[in-house]
Length: 82
Image 1 (cartoon, one colour):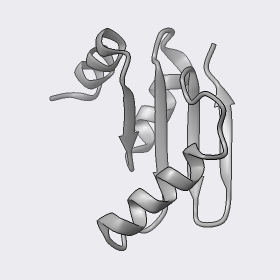
Image 2 (cartoon, one colour):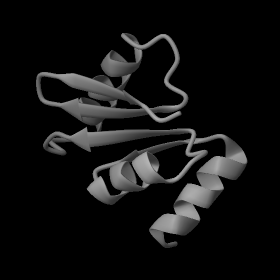
Image 3 (cartoon, rainbow, N blue to C red):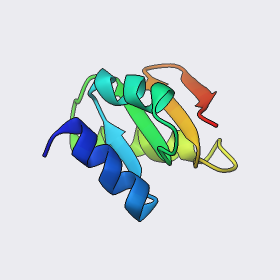
Image 4 (cartoon, rainbow, N blue to C red):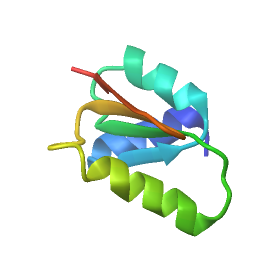
């Protein structure tokens, strides 16, 4: 499935895209209607580490929808999409 197809599916399903691919961050910033993107800019040490970082970030955010959430090793950046 291509990037645009993934984005269209997320829009239809009101889903959150979780990815290591920076292209989705770019798409989220230019395409209206993308529900949310969690962009992981961390080393994929293991699945548990990744899930812990995502859950930790989500616990600090009131509502993840309509945001580009960039998770780095020590920081979380939020960009409102619309």
